Image 1 (cartoon, one colour):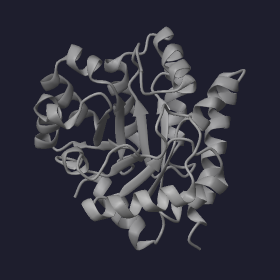
Image 2 (image 1 turned 135 degrees about the horizontal axis):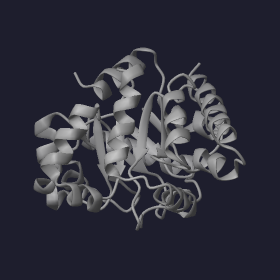
Image 3 (image 1 turned 120 degrees about the vertical axis):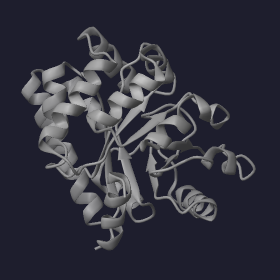
Image 4 (image 1 turned 60 degrees about the horizontal axis):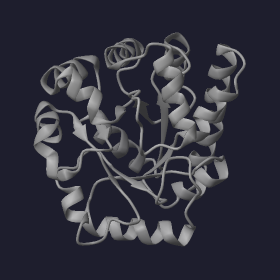
Length: 269
């Protein structure tokens, strides 16, 4: 079993959802970002999504766009992001880690080299938002053949006709984007989320994680009652943006992570 399968199976036995946290690699700088990454599991993150900085993150809202700008200004690139994963794995061999971003930096490095290095570094999954299932042979198929899960995004506009195509070749978990729009946008109604989860469960046995617009422990707890995972990104990244020192950034992110974890863990109590 992969780390992702193992983690979701463990949490199912515990009758709780996963807290999935997203941060951008290298934001605001390599050392601070690595300290945050290493601290997330102890603060309650069950799965970590690590953003691969890119110059044109078109699916992301202002918070994550600015995180990309900060990381790139600090000279973060894909090689350094993979190095960050290696350093994380020295201390943590169990927390699933998913790289999230866009195809361009991977294409630039070379797909074969990227998959080899990602596997060696300890990457468990990939979310590549601008690669549709029609292009599975470009990255999804070779990544899965090597043992790296390929996680798909589904949205409120993904209809029943399109869903099987989107889910074709999906593994690890399904990421449901609960709001049509960019990251950090407003949040969906509870009724909408309930209907969406029920619809997805008709199409897949994979765990379903829900993200976009989840910012507070209460909101995380509400989603945790409905889904297998709760994804929080922009709210954590806002703590980095607001920090005046690197230590404030670390404390701010890990403090909010701990509060969110408490909300998620108490949701079905």
